[in-house]
Length: 233
Length: 51
Length: 145
Image 1 (spheres, rainbow over the protein chains, first blue to last red):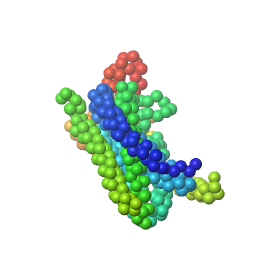
Image 2: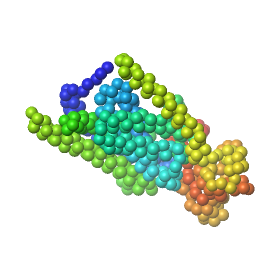
Image 3: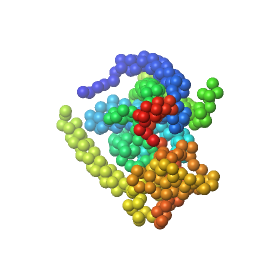
Image 4: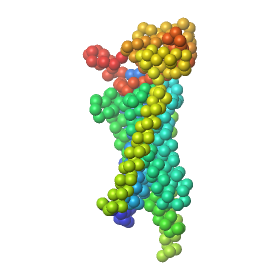
């Protein structure tokens, strides 16, 4: 069960990098074409609903990345395999960027739709807390100079913070919020027309490719960081 | 073409959100890519010294 | 699994349960503060809410919208069972319409009316192009508002 990263793995990740970058750009261009040209406006929101094509994937990956982050912190806590610590530190910043993007694009969508940039309802507030959790995780690790201790404290924070994920997910069902409930859920047919699902789907793949590409770059970065920390000690 | 740029009156909102989104993603990617290059360089130098 | 890993796993699960219980207690006690708005039925049931600043949400009742001047509006908010009359002075958001979702912020008066100083349009989770709505309406399959 003990997985160890060797130089062959790193070479493989390195050689995949240019292809991943190319694929990300390619899918983003197709996604942009569909979301800005090849899709109809909404019957109420008009063209402002096009913001959804970047807002929704950002929010999905903000949540997904945090789940992976918390999951690898749990595995690290139990097995103490340093690989899980490296994975957690590789993806944390990408997740933070996606969270920030969903907050900003959501805010820009809220102004023409609701009439305000921001409200303190349960969905928006819990999403802001998620952003702070990411920041806290990243800065705690950087701020504590004893890296063994830093890993423990930041991992503990990430795991406790995971409670926020189901709160974000179900906030729109549990409490009255200004934010609308999910349009796409597994239990029922999506309340989005097919012509609008296509751009959303392509943009989701593009964001996923971005997540993978940058996470792997950061994976290499974190491994070198670790080696340098070891030699400097 | 003008119709597209106008976005049914929502031009500022649509274009600014897409602009901020892609600008941030590109900047974030570049920061990490350049950092990796920098670290690889420093690391190779120290490794050569030890060798 | 080594005994060390097993003991870590048990400690981890125990602390997880404790944190979970703590969070559930907090959320349960914060319930009233987390709710962003009340529906008409909830407000009518709690007369102690009268005279307080709060938010009321629901659908704008059909045929209830009246404007006294360009900036003073009257409408009712319904949740299907009960209605509350709202008076609002200000600018309405673009997406404000009868039979659409809305959240108003203001004072729930003692006479059962609501004086709003802020109106937010609440969007639902449906995303459809205008042509699809037309065809759905023609074929009588449209169940939305």
